[in-house]
Length: 464
Image (cartoon, rainbow, N blue to C red; front, side, top):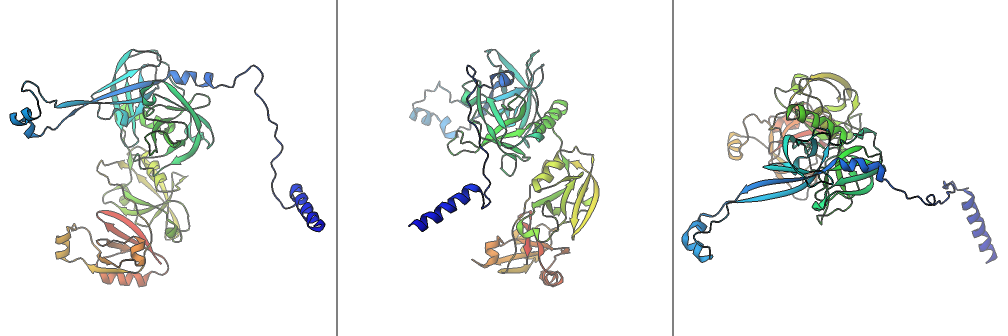
């Protein structure tokens, strides 16, 4: 027993001495706030609170009344006097918040707060006066809108720089939750650069655990100085209330969009003309660079086609700024006005190339396309005959071979192939028939990129 006790004592002493290599935290002193003083951020955010307004939007909705209810028999059956008319119109009301950015009444809010509203009313903090607001412009792609009230000498919020934010920064959400009036909640920045959330078309969210509830939309997210760093936009919740996951649109994006809305009434986005995908784990072994956006398709008569970009190109920089993923490329191009030149750096066949592209105006009917995963055996391929083309409704300009069968539980099935997929290209080889597929598979060694058309959307897969 003494021997065992001795060994344990030596081991404990070694651990305490740090001989094993554990990094010990230095001693920290616990302190109390200075006597007679209260720790408070009241002064820091007091002015910001005066710049956040309450917004009430009204929308008149026409009701479709079944024709049968207009028949006298049904009106009598439901005890509706002939003199009583059924309501054909109802009013939807929504509550939200907004942030005053100019002393003459320009206010930034969320598009979804005022979208489709017939009337927008604004009340200032600490006042019961009602202002009728005019919608200056709105942008559904970023969920930003600008409204204006007829007022002067209003308090205006100080704008911060969202590019300087750090995870863990203390923040405050100011708004009108559940219509109870001005309210402040406190938290930290939980994450930055959140995209693929599925809320907006252009996403670069600040995630925070500061309580954001219905009615907070369009309100201010400020730092501990009271400077605006974001516009509160959405929450992820199962109950309808805050669960500690809220999202705000970063102020730098807000500034860019709001200025265009004020000056032009709309936002114009740069357009490259490509469909893009994330650089998945399977695709990483194809390229030298391990970050970027893979081009899946290049539309005809677009800036990308004119510049010579091709399927399979991996875009890694825009004007010298690194592109980490597909969202990075989309946001970078969208932030550049149409008609401007942009320098793209990309990898093609393991070589780095640079090209200048003049961006066009973003077409309103542009489809969002993404791709995924890998390729394995288990497919039955078939040439596209005129009968198949007519039966399935394949447009004449789509060439390739169709996947007629995917063996259940096969590797191809698990990889995500579906009957009806059209293989249109393998690496640099365009596919017109099954023979082209066989030749391409022999021509290229190692991992190969397979491009398919699935119900009008281009996807990319990898064949080992």
